[in-house]
Length: 518
Image (cartoon, rainbow, N blue to C red; front, side, top):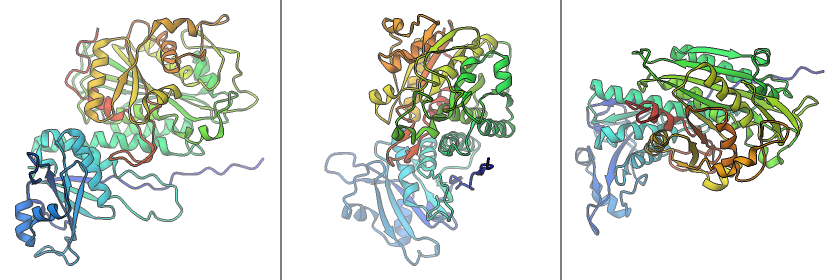
C-alpha cells in the first residue's frame, strides 16, 4: 500500500496589529490612510457630523470634508465609507494616499464592529492606517472596533501562489491616550478578536490534515503558550476509562479519537472559587457514518469541530479577559468515518458512567461524544456550571438561519447571562425550551436512550444530553445554524465562523459570570 502524503498547513496571514496614540490621525508617522468617523445627522434633513481629527485634517489638506460627504450622499450609516484619494500625498505627509470617512451609525457596539470591518476591507494591502473611530467612545467602541477590524480581515488559504491581497498590517487608534487602562482594554480586545480568528482557522483546516491527534497537538500548543494544564486521552485510554461514545464514533477511522482537556485557574483562587466546564464537539470530519450524508451535505463537514475550536480558543484567552473562575475545557474529538469497523444502526454504546444508547442513526454522532464528556465532567470535576457547544443539528439551521445560534438551559439565571453576553458580543443566541413533552421520543426498548428518534431535532438532541448532566446548572449551545457564513457580511467572512468564542469570553470575562446561578 502506498504511503499517504501528509500535508502541512501553509503559512497563514496574520491579523492586523493595533496600537494606541494620543496624537490626531494626521500626525501618525507613516500613515497611508486616515479614517475619520461620520455620525448621522442629529435631526431629519440635517447634515452628517464628522468626528475627532476632521477639522485638523481638512485644514492640512485644504479639503471641505462636509461637502465631500454631501456630494457622495453620505448618511453616516454604520460601515458606509466615502473615499478621497491623495495620489501624491499631503503636505509633510508623503505616505498619505487616502482619506476615508467611515459611518458609525448610532455608535452602538454593533456599529463600531461594522465600521471596523468595513475599514479593514477597504484598506487591504496597506501598511499603516490611523483612525479616530474608537476615540468617539473608547469604553464602548474600542473592543467592538478591534473585533470588527480583525475578523473582517480574516483569510484562510491553501494556495500554491502568494495571496493577491493581504490584510492591513497596522491600525493606529488615534486620539486615544496610551494609558494603563486603555492599554488593558486594547489587550482584552485583541485577545477576544484573536479567539474568534483562531476558532475560524481551526475550523477552516481541511480534514486531510485535521484529525483528532492534530487537534490535540493544537490544544497542547495553546496550553504551553497560555500557561494551561493539558491532558489528552488516546484511543486505548478512552476505551479503558469507559468513553464508549467517543470510541464508538471514532472506531471506523484510520485516525483514532481523542479527549482533550485544558485547565485554567485565575490568579486569585480559593476553595470557594467556582468551576465552569466547557465541552466542545470535536468531529474533525463527518461523513455521517453508515447513515451517510448526501455529498453536498458533506462539503462543509471539516468545520463540524467548531465547538471544539471555540473551547480551545476561549481557554487561550481567559487570562487576557481576567476570567475570575476556574475553567476546564473538554474537547471530544473523533472522525466519523466509514469502514468495516463502523458503528451500525442498531448498535448499542455504553457511555462514561454506564448509561447506554441505541444508535439508530450514525449521523447523530455529536451527541454521542458530548455525552461522554458531560458525564466525565459531572463525575470528576465537581462543576458549578457546564456549558457545551456544538454544530449539532440541521434542525437548528432550519429554525434560526445562519446569523443566530440556539441554546437550551436548565437554569434561568445562566440562560439570562449567556443571552445577554452573546448579544453584547455580536454572536446572538436564542433560547429554546427543554420541552419534557418530547422526552418519550428518546426512549429505547433495548437501551437507556435512542440517539435519533425523530421529532423536533434540536429539542430532542438537547433532551438526550440533559440526562448526562444530572442536577448541575447546564447550557447547551447548538450553533449549527451559524457555523458557516454564506457571504461576507461585516465581521463575518465567507466560510467557518468560529461562532461562540466571543459570546463565551464576554460571559466568562464578566466580574461574576455565575451571578444568580443556583
